[in-house]
Length: 225
Image 1 (cartoon, rainbow, N blue to C red):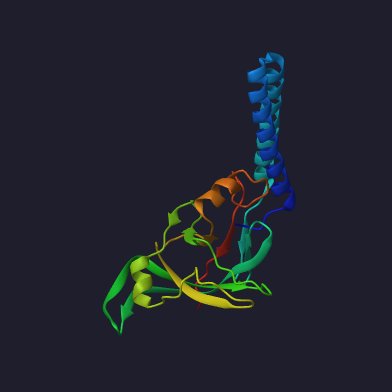
Image 2 (cartoon, one colour):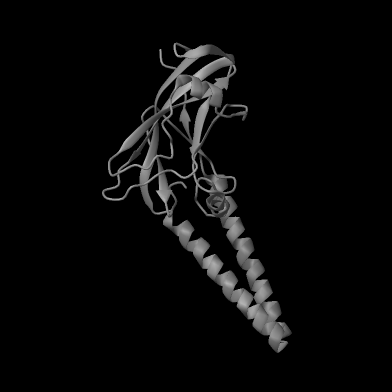
């Protein structure tokens, strides 16, 4: 769940309440056989939904994706309000192979391994918080999406869970690995979180980064050295 404008939450809640009342009104009209009332409610609901979708798409179309630099933080909001969890990219390394030492076999990349060090932190004063099903992927200029390389991450021996609960002021550091083409163009890390129901809600939440057609916040990936 991303940093969300309060007005988007208000409009979504207002729409849910309006649809509930409209449903009750339609049921009442059907039971009382009031055709004109039913027609008026259905027309009003259609206008409301059309207006809501128009605002949603307009706000998303006018939004600009943000690309964060090294050390810049991206907030995550629990219950869409308390934005105490945040993530940042602290380092980026590349390698042709990963392993050696305790690992019996070195893993070679199809292109190059990009090893991204991310820090997740909490600035909460009292509560212990954690990310909900965090998802990390890399996107490039043509729009190609690259998933994490689980085998390479295991070879690194980094077992820190991104879902670890963080106490007040606590943080964790984790390295995630991607196999990217050697000629990859402007790779960026996309870091999101939330259960499936969160993603469905956010799809229709005006002004939310994960809403329909909205610009995304990503992290620029530039290899160190």
